[in-house]
Image (cartoon, rainbow, N blue to C red; front, side):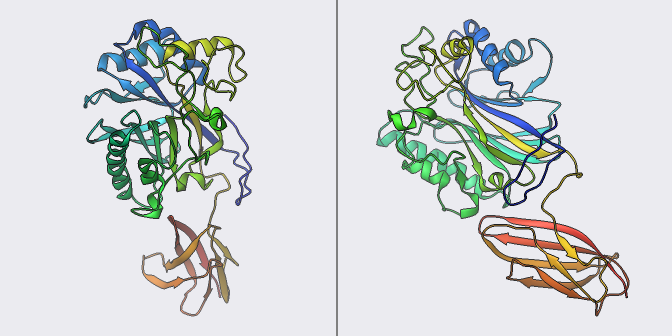
Length: 401
């Protein structure tokens, strides 16, 4: 699909960019809780969302994984593959993805005192790498449950902190948070252990979410007003349990990034506080989708689009050298990045021999002079450090005399 995006600080037209729709969905003790009876409703919802990547929580078995893949996602055409079930404590996570959009998948699982956290390492068809985590944290209010959620998120945050700076990270699932001041939420989004590994809420909707009409548009649970035979919760929409968090690198609108305006809780029109999702008119989705959401599970799915470049024929942040070729001197201009700290600039000749190296503290760049440079082609590398991330850029420089 061809899209044109206007980017904030870059102001570039991405003529060869595409989007990847990522969805998280708690599908309620599947398949033991009336799972086969809910297949048509799950299919209706997911065909409407049309996700490229789907993580689900409360999957119970490989049979459940196979049912979602074959009887929900692949009914009309074979598009989706799944990761084999990891059978951890209690219910589990599962990943489904369009194989034409995702080149490779590795999976790893973080043990916690409660349920395991799934790590899926994806390579998107544009060559970008994405670390996607699916979580289902301890449920219910109370100090004991909050401490359990803190223990789980501490394990996750420490793990993310060991990834390379600038790694693209999404954490999605059923967090069971009641407010943004809960210690477990602050563990994920705070500066500790390192500021560069913190996560962000793309909606920046901090507050007391539980039973608060001010956050009616953000609630994901419960989609029902009464309890059905499958055992799901009733009471209407009044909690923001399901969400998608991301690393700071995915908000920078370069390379692979999360498009904040596409973050949607499917079926939540902001007018169903403490009501069922299909109560009366739902302005967010057609009535058949609202009904399917009601019967599919007690949670609403959350979805967001990830934008990425398809090839190198697009305007991206780049290292600028002017003039190039260099006669007497040339200026290396750095791409714009907020919270700039310092940069290291290295120049090597075609044999790999270093001919220039300098650390600079100015975001405006550095000046090269041709003394010491023979006529020829050189390779320039600039490593830019910001408060949150490190970025590496490459360019070629021609020298004439």
